[in-house]
Length: 383
Image (cartoon, rainbow, N blue to C red):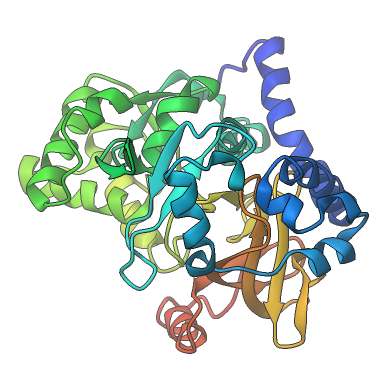
């Protein structure tokens, strides 16, 4: 019979998910509160003052004051921040610089991460905590998380007279806030970083071997991170050690993100490597933040309305994310502590509230690819 945490840890787990759950009940109220907090942050930046933060009293004022901007449009400002003009976009010193994996037309984006931003990224742990509270599967806290995250330090660039280290957001997140999550990550981020930031197959084989060696004597109950990497690790074990992760560990839950269709297109392959007992919980995030996670058995994610401000560019114009109707899709616009009204480049599909899916990047082919994937997986739009 699973062991329940003692009352204090249980209370801490509840406190981690309750703000999210309350925000889902009244997203309009939650979004107003988030906007007030962000306006106070933007008021301490040059960019915010240039757009009249002192005159913003409601959502409509905010939308009138700040333009929707893509990364390309923010890029000159980001470069100025990198050169030392911190207050242009940030109200705090950055604790790190995150890079993307080149998914935006092959371009690598540089995104600053602040202390406030990092505290919000711990929300990715809500998927695990909520799963445990709903299922009573507290045994997972007695094991470790198989850490397959990317390095937090990949290299450095010289900007003016400064040398700036940069790495992947998942690694930076793990390095700074893993102590706040209830499951220990193995291997540690320091051990992953020590292998360097290379991207060749040899580099990834070294990381996978490190993860295998370190986790072999451990009780692995959780796999978190990037879904394709979790699949690649399974293939590595089959190829190199002639067995699968499910032969060595009893994984109870996988919290995975970065690509569409984790619960539909990739589920059977994931279960093939990690076992049918492993519950899949999807996380929706990007280099810019952790925006939502799966709440229950429905195979879609629920937004963090209490942490970020969400809008969507639809055919009918810009509307709030929570105003979308089932079947409606659009381009997501996210406001974070760093970026007001950032058009992130993802296409979002609404289901019955509060459920959403990211179906891919903004392209005319995305709905067709999504429909084809639903057909091939025989999911056909079902939650």
